[in-house]
Image 1 (cartoon, rainbow, N blue to C red):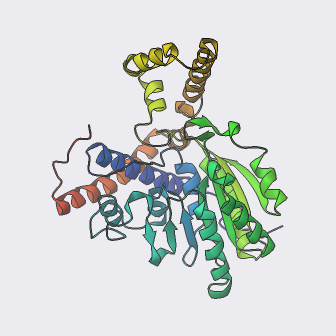
Image 2 (image 1 turned 60 degrees about the vertical axis):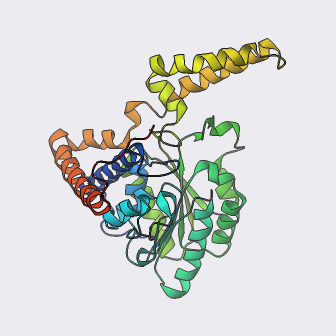
Length: 353
């Protein structure tokens, strides 16, 4: 058995405080995008708060972090000042990366933290960080955050293989929402991810990402193993992605507002069914039925209110206690947002069409 730290029991209030601040930051980022102040697609980590908070609670000075294009949550959890993060998303020279990275490519050298929009790159980055840590910072650990779709990338498999062969001190965190953008992950992924990792010699564990304390417990042992030189862990955490793959995801809009969205989509659907030439009508009808089934599964799955990790922890803490923590987190984020908008002269904002 690996000896766990003395204080390995989760502090619910601290975990919820982190989750609440991540949620408030992501909601604020979404508002900036809707106002037209952030360019391009906006990928939010709403729904991943339990995974990020549970893992990041074990990160300490000297540890390194690699993350995907949902860059805000791990850095908020790490305690990086909010103003540089917001300025970076706005493309301002005073941002974390002088406005050159945007929300998908946060980079914080002082925190040994780096993100990438390249799918699966976090695993390779973390393996490199871990190799350096062995020589430069013995006893340190590294963590990589990526989605289940990234697990099919060759660089992820290579990183897992080398981490196992060299017993690198790294924790690979796979955030699995069950969707590869707009298709079910199971339709494009063969086998089982836990067995796949074990086949490469990596210890593999699962945690329910909607339960932050479950993630915290699994991460505690993963980090203890890494620091003790016992090699890597693949932590598979199921979690919802409440805003879909990107903000404004059409499938999410259709589930949430069917009366408004369905009529707007109907003409294109009818035109597709009737177009000539094309596939046989029966095949088109079956394809439409499969699409309808996919939308229904989205509504019954990750968009169900009961899967929200913040709401779950709110109930465990109690309404009053949770409300105070959420209010404090919201005040911190809103204060930073207000200062940033004043600095950039965007108090009035804009509006995305």
